[in-house]
Image (cartoon, rainbow, N blue to C red; front, side, top):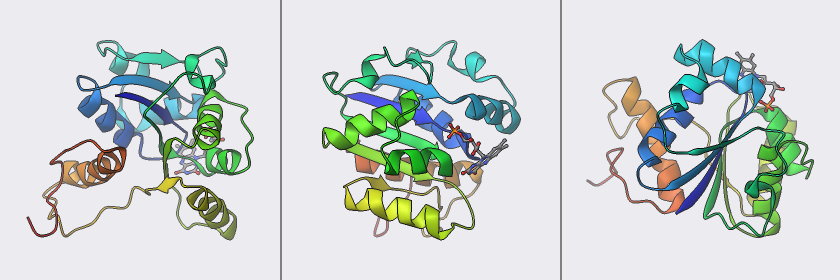
Length: 184
Ligand SMILES: Cc1cc2nc3c(=O)[nH]c(=O)nc-3n(C[C@H](O)[C@H](O)[C@H](O)COP(=O)(O)O)c2cc1C
């Protein structure tokens, strides 16, 4: 599977780190990180994003690289994920304002009717944020906010992160046992 991952400037870049770690050996990954998200990565994870990806077999594109294959609908990707997604990037996607590679690939996903998964992170959500999510949900986008559940009995923070990442993998259609399912 080919999967595009956009990391926007919201708190919770650790979810993207975990998704990349889980998928790097299983899929072909195309990753784009915004400038602010790079700063947040350093602040929340404690290392540079460039250091993290150094040993990873993934393709990385600058967020202003519109020559990237991800910028075109003719390049077929199985799923596009924005994790976490800032309210600014959410708004751009909801309004077709494709001024970065992340917002452009989301635009491509919508126009090509491909799987788009967005994980918006903010609290509280304003009516503007909610309207943008509703607009995208009506277009078929999966809105999976990084909200943990506790029926899976997470024993630590990793369990909380794996629940959200597991839900995203479910939506992509990748079998996983990252969290304890209800009934298991
Ligand atoms: C440390 C830090 C945390 C932030 N967390 C959030 C957040 O959780 N949600 C959000 O919508 N914006 C957050 N922002 C603001 C966005 O980064 C800002 O609106 C930026 O323009 C988003 O651009 P991007 O989506 O292209 O990365 C945060 C900024 C910083 C510096």
